[in-house]
Amino acid sequence: MNIRIIILVIIGLIIIIFNAYGQYKTGQAETNKEFVLTGNLICDLRADNYYDAAADSAVSAKKTVKVKLYSPVTAGLFSLVIPGAGQLYTKQYLKGSLFLGAEAVLWAVYLLHEKKGDDKTSDFKKYADENWSVVRYAGWINANFSKNIAINQTEVNLQPWERVQWDELNTIEEEIGGDLSIQPTGFTHKLAPYSDQQYYEMIGKYSQFGSGWADAGWFTRADVIANSGLGNVSDQFKAYAKMRGDANDYYDIATTATYIIVANHILSALEAVWNTSGINRRIRMHSHIEPRNVYGNFVEFVPTLHMQCEL
Image 1 (cartoon, rainbow, N blue to C red):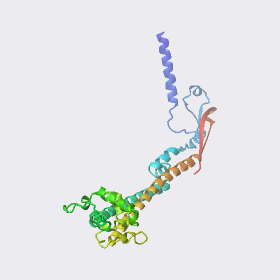
Image 2 (cartoon, rainbow, N blue to C red):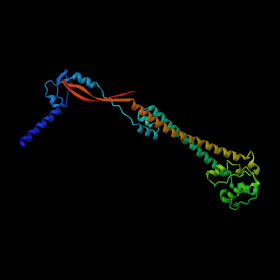
Image 3 (cartoon, rainbow, N blue to C red):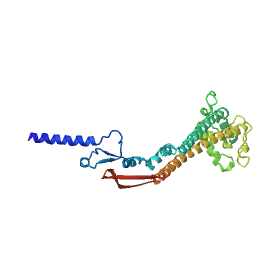
Image 4 (cartoon, helix red, strand yellow):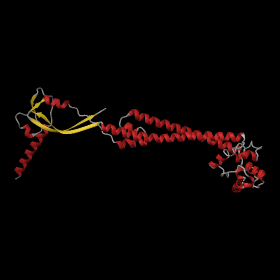
């Protein structure tokens, strides 16, 4: 029993070694007909098992070209995050560079004008704090409309916005604007709390607040409603309004840049998806089983995939 097992093991080892050896070829055939081992035991036992160098050379001359199919979803997501990345993924380097370059320029435009807007905003706020006073505005109302808004006249070292009762001021503004017996007055707004964005907008936009500027000592009730309601305002009012306008222009450019940035992301993503789908459509494949005369009369059937790419 043990001898039989040993014999079977030896035979198995011989078969394994024989087949393994058949996979190994060294050197180049000196003639077109040369006996070789194929690794196929049945074929190797045939007497007419010869190596056909010409046939093998023809087969070897066929090069295998690997064509990569790209994912439209991947390309689209790449470009949606970073414009041009999807194009670079599909090796469309020119398009990718254009989208990526546009993104860099747009961000530069945005950051530059956002900073200019911030700098201009700081400038006009500083200008307003130095030249517009709610104390002057409240005092002018008291003098021209016979009101009595409380103003702290003792602690003059306090900032102007700390010396006036804001709620009381807003109440009086509302009364003046709603008193039909004295219309038109030009009082259409209540002054927003100090440091609010609306505060800095109002004092340079509505003539109602023109009396608060340092160079408007001559300001009268008639000046509020002059020029068809636009008012007859001072030079400081006009200079301040221009500063605010310049800041808003910078912010508008920055905002426009953000819209174009978003559009650049979307367009790059759509183009990447479209382009990738087009590349994949230009790749045609078909497969079949191809007979191939490998050694002598031995025919091998090889699964073959043909791929064609239109460039």
